[in-house]
Structures are given as C-alpha cells and as structure tokens.
Length: 216
Image 1: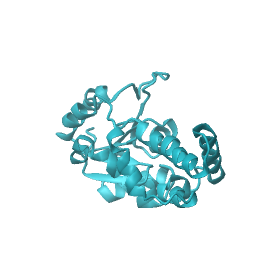
Image 2 (image 1 turned 60 degrees about the horizontal axis):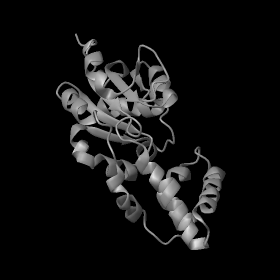
Image 3 (image 1 turned 30 degrees about the vertical axis):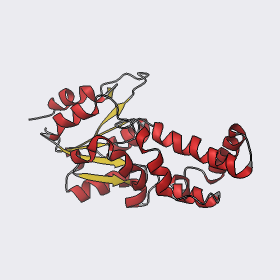
Image 4 (image 1 turned 180 degrees about the horizontal axis):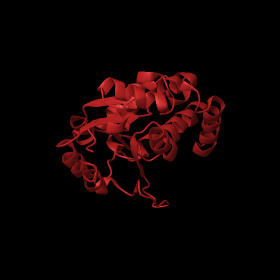
C-alpha cells in the first residue's frame, strides 16, 4: 500500500543538532559569563542548573525568549537565532532524498521544537519548499513532546488516515514507538548505528527504496 504522507522529524533527522547546542550551551553561558564576570565553564554550570530547575516537562524549558528574560540579558530572541543561522547544517543526503520523495509523496515536518527554531533551519538551502506543512508540537499543539495526540492532530489536519502515514525520526520513543502505537508506519534513524531491525535506518538514503516496497 502506497504511503500518501511522509512525516519527518527535523533535528537529528534532517538537520544536525549543532545549531541548538550552540545556542543553549554556548551562547547562553557566554552571555551569563559576561553579565556576572565568570569564566565560561562556571557560567555553563550555573546555566545548566537553571535549565534543570525548570526541566524538560515544562514549556518554558523550550523557550529561548523565556531564558533571555529569565537571565536578564537584554538581548532579543531573533538576534540570537539569526546569529547562529550560518551554523545550521543538513545531513549530506537530505536534498537528494527529498527531491526523490517529493515526486510521489506529501511531505511534512513534525518537530517537537518551537516554530522560531524550525523556521531558521528550514531556510537552509530552502528546504522549506519540499514540505506541504510544518508542524511544531509545542507551538501548534501546546505539547512538549511528540505524543500520540500530536500525530493524530497532524493526520486530522492533513486529512489522512494513520495507516497512510510514515514517520521518520531519530528518537526511539517519540519518533518510533509512539507513532507505531496508533498504526503509523515508522522508521527509526540511528545515525550512530547502535541498533538493528527491520525499521531501523542509518541515514535517509535508503528511505526511497524501502518506501517503494509499500506501493501498490
């Protein structure tokens, strides 16, 4: 059966995670070090402790604007996001794979990140042009993780049945086990090659040929 829609995770699947790392663990600590006259490592420790106090089950944890105001840095979110835009990097196979898949499938992004982060990344090599829709779990649905309801909302908005959807991502729980639990065909992208299995892939390169097996 041909899959009519392919949903892609973004970070760790299409885009390398460096952009996020630079902002959360380089820029914020540097701003903290400058404000409080600390060396970088000490500032980084203090920043991480503040992150941990909030925790990743709180919507604030994902908001750059929240942290800039929390620390009182006096710098805008857009300024930081644009500063690191040149560091957004696609995995090498991404463009060729999207070119192939776009011919036969509806492509969407289903990311847990906030839309402000997503928009910067999708500008890289104009990859936004390959996707019919872009969904942010946190910005669009107020959910901090890609849980079952996120996938159901995506299917409802795009008007497809779960069984007509493929999701591809690098988080074994939220990109693989969760969508599979409601009948979505899922592929786990393990770029470190630590896992084996029928639905485990090590890059996106093998995706077009694998998907062709499900076509009628």
